[in-house]
Image (cartoon, rainbow, N blue to C red; front, side, top):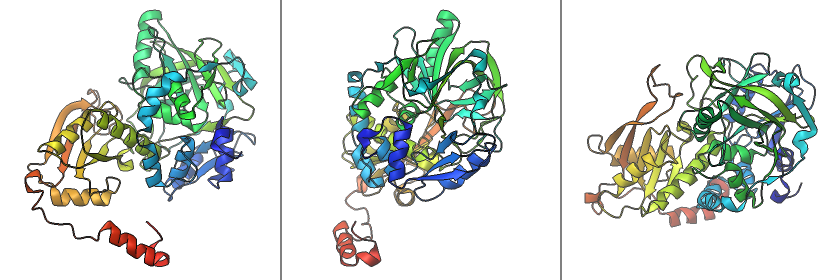
Amino acid sequence: MTSLDDIDDLRGWLALADKLGEVRTLTGAHWDKEIGAASEVNYKRQAPPALLFDDIVGYRTGQRVLTASMGNARRLGMTLRLGTDLDDRALVEALRSKPGEWAANAHRFPVREVTEGPVRQNVLRDDDANLLAFPVPKWHEGDGGRYIGTGCAVFTTDPDTGVLNAGAYRMQVQGDGRAASINIEAGKHGAAHVRKWFAREGRAPVTASLGHDPLLLVVAGTEVPSGVSELEYAGAVLGRPVDVIPGELTGLPVPATAELAVEGWLYPDRREDEGPFGEWTGYYSGGTEPVLTLDIQRIYHRDDPIQLGAPPGKPPHDYSYMRSVMKSAMIQDALIATGLPGVEAVWAHEAGGGRQLLTVAIHQQYPGHARQAGYLTSQLPAAAYMNKFVIVVDADVDPRSLDEVVWAMCTRTDPADDIETLRQTWGSRVDPLKEAGAPPFNTRAVIDACRPWSRLEQFPKVAEASRELLDHVTRRWPDVLGGSR
């Protein structure tokens, strides 16, 4: 394994990541909470490595679980095929305009249907299909069960148009391992597909990949524009079509190089109690409630399959860095596409799970520009779900730095005049503020932390050295001051 072009599956991704010194192996962990707890410790490290669990208690050597696949800039850049030596700033720069380009070019990369692939090395049918034959973790101490779907890609189609959707929905193993509940938020594309299938045929076909090139987790876990197939979007990132095998029962795609995949049908009255589960907000998502449940009729897997784990939790968690970077790039592209001038940068902070706290940096050009930027950002399709705070700052403030953003709020925001709220906006069932039984609305604030337009020329000058002077002194004393900037 020598280059990005050689990556064709999770094993190829692991080989290159290992060659770059980005993988650590942990042996002897128990599936019951130990894998999750060890992963949590790892997420809190600076630039955490990928963690590969092997020799899991109760399972044979080779049945592995991978976490923190994209926990730093180097591995996320590798996954997005942008390079293998990127730091945070270089990754953000490399991503500028990329999501929009990938979405626009996705139609050029329709999936390539094949009849065989590594995922069909083993096919378990009907009563032989048991998810507990694999080391499915119980990720958090308070979880209601074992979750095989965290880093997954769940595939559904629109029965009217045939458009495919891939979503990263949580999947809890049910009963004796022959079923899995799929918790799909009502506003997601997959939920709309399922409702259409129920109305049309009384059941909905589903396939789900549970171990794959982490790129599929990226596209399944971020809001790809409506009408764009996530697999075609992945093809645009790769520059080549994604190979898929039609499921034996539904004809829905299964990535040909996946490690582990399932297939079956959802029925309106087939529900099992699901949860609680430690969610990306940092809280358990309530108690238990009946959730649509997939009867597992086929399991496809490679020899010794590797599960791709991506458990959420209190930030930083498994995919919070990935979501922050991807959402930042997608929101910036979408904001520029509205025609708003002067956009310098956007950052979706990990502390808000990459959704709830957004900062937009602009070059102010006219009265009301800052408020316009805030209002537009708060309701963009790429940003609207579960957003709580949009903070607009001047271009001299680094939107990635919470210290700088809070400094701007403290010195440029008048709480009486510069904070406005929008009510009954798009929230989520996992919001810890949502009361039981209430619809999932939320309220969000737009905070103008820019210099007042009427005082731009007279506003006090910031007491800091110029970038040129900072560069000069760091070049003079690199050993003491940290090298070139």
